[in-house]
Image (cartoon, rainbow, N blue to C red; front, side, top):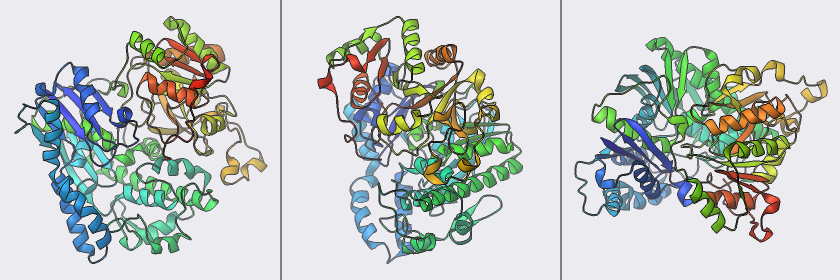
Length: 610
């Protein structure tokens, strides 16, 4: 039984394929089209999934779409009616698009599928899952748990913004929901917008900015903006928001409450913005902790699964783990809308068709390495056609050369194996560097990634060494848990250093691995496991043998505004358009100084800023 899942038409479209309950392939469309957060029908992602399975679209039993467009349209209409006559401008803007396209998505999807198989009859082959059920399915069905509570939180699905489901075996049932417009995800996005970052893109920047500030406005948020109950349920005061009927997230009343106008993109960040980021992060953590504590007490379950865009808030996730109300936590690595494609496919298999579920000792995501890979000869041909100069090394020599380059302080582009599914680079499409370097955080931000200087980098650490370097003794393969650097690895700050505020904290080394230690001593940890990524594990092991340190900086292989590289050509272009010094694609090793200078690119201004 083969089922395709599709998410599309809003942001981060993707396709996934499940065969007899096994996850075969999944990929986001942006990696193929090179358009970040691409919302179009995932044609190339679908073609990849079918090719990986060795089948055509006519061989697929069902296609499941990740939400129900008519329910979403119902929410849109009811919201405009409830707020009328306010919001007529937004209504006038939205209606033509809905009436022309989105209301008839079933027909649009069938037309797209017929492009792949013109004669195939899709009658009774196209299923629709509700948005938050897709999220819940993506979290529970691949998890290593026979039973678990499943918490999903995002901006909004059809009506739902947060949900609690209970999963057991192949059963998954939604128990409770919070409905639009009351949304933790949209509240966080409102502060993302207010602090000058892009909604649905810049929320992780707010999370990264938060440790530079103090949560001075948290009590104000809880007093004026949000009515938060002890069990984590809440209502928002919509007098401060514009997203129901307007073209912006917040309004003038919000501006007056928090002390000024919306920050324009690329304007300097002030301590005020940092304090706002710290405040909304603190409120988010409080909401999530109240929810998870209530769920644990109410259900008595020991396992928790998380999905939805808010589940990408790895700081909040780390607090839930530390809180200890659940023995084990599993987070879907593609927690946002892209992961809805996988959830839709799994929902079709287990919930619609009632097929049994196999639960293993580890999760079913295969490390989230579910995207394309390239044979060695094809890599060589593609690089040669780009004009690249490289040497082909035996695998052990390639690993040794890369480990040596890292130990020498060089930035390494690492393109190996299957591409990751989800927003995080996990050692398949990564830029790597020495975590011990005091200057690497600044160098990578400003000269390699071309992004804001305040943004932290994540460490990849051998799973067997994680508790020696971080206050964590658990698997974190998907870089979705934050933990402090181990006390014995921390550097004691001087009195003068402790008095610093804001960005002044940035360049003060705080540990033996300063390039991945945030200003509050935290780190977004990825544990690297030999059974899911042997080559990456061997690279870090070789680096450890040379330096005594089993930790590398790991950031996504792209520059600001660019999707993560998806092909050897993408990797070479990014290599030539940034100050990455060494590139490893398969067993091909490229050094910057050996390349034709005429192939150098200006990547700094090549992509729309995110």
